[in-house]
Amino acid sequence: MFNKILIANRGEIAVRLIRACRDLNISPVAVYSEADRESLHVKMADEAYVIGPAASSESYLSIERILDAALKSKAEAIHPGYGFLAENAQFAKACEDVGLVFIGPSAGAMKLMGDKIASRLTVEKAGVPTIPGKNQPVDSVREALALASDIGYPVMIKASAGGGGKGLRRVSNEEELRSVYEMTRGEAQSSFGNATIYLEKAIDKPRHIEVQLMGDHDGNLIHLGERECSIQRRHQKIVEECPSPVVDAHFRERIGDAAKAAAAAIGYYSLGTVEFLVDSTHHFYFLEMNTRLQVEHPITELVTGIDLVREQIHIAAGERLRFRQQDIRFRGAAIECRIYAEDPRNNFFPSPGKITSLFEPSGPGIRNDSGVYPGFTITVHYDPLISKLVAYGENRPQAVDRMRRALGEYKIGGIQTTIPFLELLLSHPAFSRGELHTQFIEEHGLLDRLNEDGSLECSVPVIAAALSYFLDRRKTPAVSPAPRGGNWREFGRFPRHPRW
Image 1 (tube, rainbow, N blue to C red):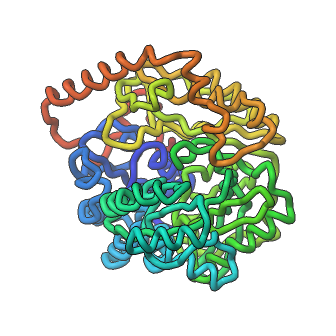
Image 2: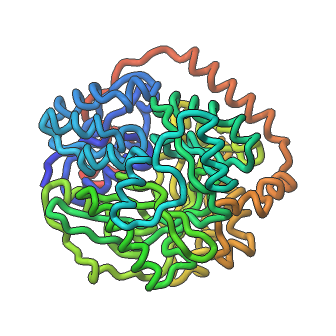
């Protein structure tokens, strides 16, 4: 087992990884940008290294600076978390080149599954169903129009290197396709450095269901059930649950076997997730594979009783899986809500600023993976995720009830958050019935209903607060780098103790 791991990330996921290291008696090392000097993950780590200014391109996306910090700290491995460099094959290879263990899959598997066209071809050969479309780049509007006519509208136009909802559009007719073709290529180029796009059939109101996988270096591979991720806004997940309300034991076995077949085709090891779209007749189609730890991993942990991050670290250390497929048991139900510093009554406008007060929910069945504290400042530089609130119950109705209670308890002062929107969403009768699909929010007009209650009265003060924050940042003088160690002991809000 490792003695020291560098965590190449920030926020709540960095805190989660630090806790996993503590459980394994591993010394956690943090990296941070100048904007994150007072972040919780910096204060919790045994050592912390500044790696550049606020811009991600010069800090959390800088392979050279992260590797330099790892070598200085004498870390043996790097955990990338999710986002930033987590699915960057070049980063994984660079870690190997300098003798560091990358806690994740091989660079080759990551590169293959990061290419949507190549991944479709690979899983098709393994017998995994894919969405009807063309497994080749579409190089012109003319070619796109001809293919869309063959497939039949509506179609999805997608970036081959895409992810996170970028480079992705649903097209209903020829006129729309003509207007968004070049726009999508441009977005793909700017976001991923690759303008390659392809077309596939759009499935009407699909469920988004993903399967959690775990594999070791000896070829042992298991799945840990599915997660329902259908509640989305702009192709971004905001609520996830495990298990899916529509998946029974037989369906779980079929979709789990398909996910394992896709992973086995590339000799996959570490944690990974295969995502599927499921139509109204319960036919499922491969969407993509995420070659990393998922944001929504806590709900699988609660339902299976397995610490996924702990197992991922064991696998990276060369150990065999400690579980067989028949050992995996599913108990109860869990739901996760992503809490963002955004104003849902003002088109989810970012809400940077200082958290003036904080009351986090607790009680039976509640877990809150957070990266903030009272007095912490949410900046405009990164994803505004504050925390992941998770509720567990003996069954889905109890988990939903506990989540509603927890959302009502959660109080965050000084900024706007998405909590009111989540409360509205979970109170909808269709959600209670489990009638979910990726257009759920639009179909039920939830944004309109939220604005009926609160209108847009807060839009002006939110904008004013944001402008004030920017002006204050410009006036703030530069400060010297924080010391490499000792941050944890200096954080007076918590006891002086070697473990969190």
